[in-house]
Each structure stands twice: as C-alpha cells, then as structure tokens.
Image 1 (spheres, rainbow, N blue to C red):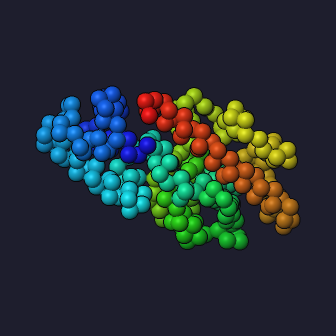
Image 2 (cartoon, rainbow, N blue to C red; image 1 turned 90 degrees about the vertical axis):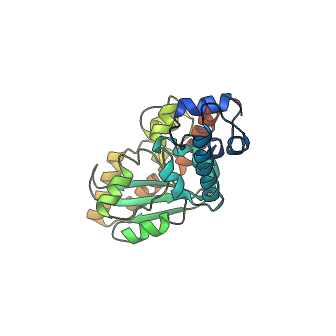
Length: 250
C-alpha cells in the first residue's frame, strides 16, 4: 500500500489522492512516468517526483523512520504490508491506570519478550528491543502505552512508525476495547484468561508484590501475552480491510 500512497506529497490530501487513483495514477511509478498529471503543474510535478524518488530510496533502504515523519499518524497502517516482518506488537501493564509500568510485552510474530519490573525492565532494555524493529503496533498505544513508557523511561521509544489499532479499527466500524473487538472477530482466549480485565491485572501484580508468589506473576504475564499475540490477527484483518476499502480497484 505504501507504493500506492501519495498522501505524503506536498499539498496532497485524501481527496487529491483518490483523484490520482481514479485517473490511473495508482503507484509511484505511474506518477513518475506520466508526462503530466491532472492538477499538477510542471514545477509542482517535478517537486513531487523528487519526493517520491526520496521515498523510494528510503523504502529500499528499509528506513522506516522516514515514513513516520512524512505520513500522517492515522495512515501508518499503510506501512504494515511492507514492514510486517519487522513489526513488534506491544502492550504494557501498570500498577494503576497511569501508575508505574509493571510489565512490557513485546511480540515479533513468532516469539514473545516480557520485561518485568524488578527483574529485567528498564529504559535501555525497552529501547534495545524496539530498535530491532521497524513498526510498532499497539491498541490505544498513542494515548496510553507509549506516553506512559516515555513518562517512566524517557527516551525509551525510538522514532518509528506506530500503528495504533484502536483508530485503525474505528475506520472499519470496530469500536470499544481490545477484548470486545477480539470477540467480534471470533478471536478466543484460553478459558482461564477469558474473564481477566485490566483491573484484574493490577490486582495480580499487587498480589505478586505482596506475597512473592510466582503464580500471580505467571498469570499476569500470560494475560499480557494474550494481548500482544492477539494484536497480530487483528492487524492482518484490519489492514486487509482498509486496503480493500481504500483501493477497491486493486
């Protein structure tokens, strides 16, 4: 989808982008090879050609931060197909809504990495793990997870594209919390984790800290792992649907 995108060009919004697609300018190569483009004068087209060529160079180099800079945050979903192999799905747990970070869960599509307060959680570890990837995927992370991490561990979030599924889901009619959307999509959790809520996650952490019993931490980690693992199938469905609805002719 990123090579079909023109929304990062100078003075190009969603309406102009749709007009380009309707005129047969579906990909970057179509724009570059066209002698003229409707609505673009010679000087403006030349400038946009240079923007596209710069984007192409950065895409070939795998320079994801370039696209975090030029794309509106609401359009970072367009990068998923290109960078899905380097995406990381992230979710945090806290001691209260904006309390201390207790668990940071990371999933790369194959393996999970869990950072726990008092064991292996620190700003350096968070940043080192995130820097292995090119795209961060969260649910409501722009309002919660990432700001909270930056509050307690300043500088731990590298400048990368960030796909916030809460807003991507809303584009196709899915509203509410993560677990509600999971149910609507038919994504099931194990019976022992099905009814655990965010408030329960706080209680599990408090029980672990007060008792030292590993069973409470293990359950909290299992809950967090379900959150991050389930982000992947949601992302696949949402991005496929957004692609179909944005570019129905492709």
